[in-house]
Length: 206
Image 1 (tube, helix red, strand yellow):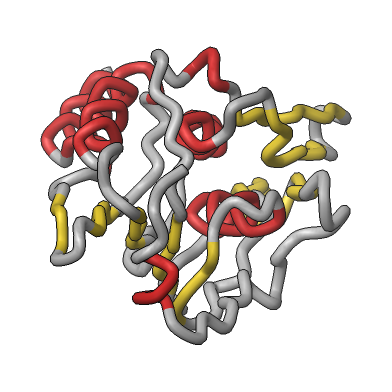
Image 2 (tube, rainbow, N blue to C red; image 1 turned 30 degrees about the vertical axis):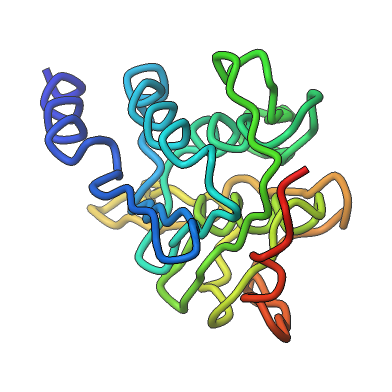
């Protein structure tokens, strides 16, 4: 019942998407407000939004107000931007003593591949799974990060029962990027200097 209510709420919010826009100069703009755990339900919405923007000269993904969500949805969105299967994030779970690799996989992209330049807007409110997407795209050299340093939450946490009615929220896993061999915990995802984005956007698409 709880999952059904959560799905209805996620559908009401269109899984974190509420706008698709083409700006002056044929620049695509897509704000993403969350990364839902209902990946298969959200997949058509993300596909449709990105397909609408696929003919633009560059894409701005706005993550400034994205507080996180599911790493599975992160890898799903990343799948549209890579022509080959590419490791995105490894999560080492200490409670389960397990390691799981999330991949950006074109087989999950329903035939849509975007090779256009990507710029990701970020802020101090960008956190957790949103940082995962930004950091993974940055470290794979697939996007430039523009804005403020993100919040710095790379370690998944959950409440643990201490007894006597007390709970403590502790990290139980850590995210490891396959390229940097580290993550953004405590430091955030750092933006990159972009001297003249307008000139870059004018470059013809390959």
